Amino acid sequence: MTSRYGMTVPLGGVSLANHRDTYRELVDLGYTDVWTAEADGYDGFTPLALAAAWAPELRLGTAIIPAFTRGPALFAQSVASLADAAPGNFVLGLGTSSNVIVERWNGLPFEEPYKRTRDINRFLRKAFEGEKVTEDYDSFSIKGYRLGVKTERPPILIAALREGMLRLAGRESEGVILNWLAADDVPTVTKIVSDAAAKAGKGDPEVVARLFVCPSDNAEEVRAQAKFVIAAYLNVPVYAAFHEWLGRGDRLAGMWENWKAGDRKAALAAIDDDLVDELIIHGSPEACKEHIGRFVEAGIKTPALAILPFAGVNLAQAVRDLAP
Image (cartoon, rainbow, N blue to C red; front, side):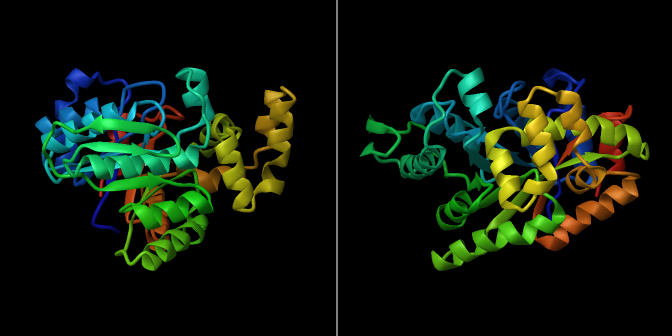
């Protein structure tokens, strides 16, 4: 399918202290990468630091670290620490996150997310050159900061949804991280990234996608539970705008209208089963692998699987069933 094949960690129900065997099994099963997210649970760096010690064969990646929730200097320190712990084996995924995580949960203004992501990316590149940084960016200013860790800068991938951020990823980073899209959407978004990279005289960008997977034949139960997750995400303004741009405005209008009106039951009922089947990979393990393969054929170079434990799916067994 692809030379890279990742799993989202940590796995639910297993404490970080007990993840050594989990990481070792991922290596034995043929997984090449582990990827973390950062929302309301574990931070994005600690699970990867443990993986660096327990399973150095695995490439480590964040999908994603929000550009807003750390100050620039602390951001550089966190990135440098993990890069030093896993030399040449860490990829930083950087993105805007959302108003929910930034404003509601972290009490920070979610203002000009494009500029903030661009500026953090530019600052990190400058900081890793080892010189003192004094510079006024559009979204913050740095006065006399020098990164005290001497290590190689990891590749930076920018999480992107619509055209502006997709072009930024192609133009100013080593690749892009995609999320909440269907296999048929991949060529639309990756062309923008590749064209921007080529125009900037850069090589072929890496394309990572977080893919939500539930290896269960109980389609009715999976779809019912998946609609809650889809509604939770696709009512967030950045994802709503993304899917409207992709051409799903008419299909999602009923869900959006009912959600805004406070009728959650009607909002869920307005999500059609075909949409669930496009955005959530489910079915037998063989069917799931075939669906993942469609993403790869469409242009995804690194699938980063995120298992949804719907319909009684056992996470550990799902990891084994989906192994490459």
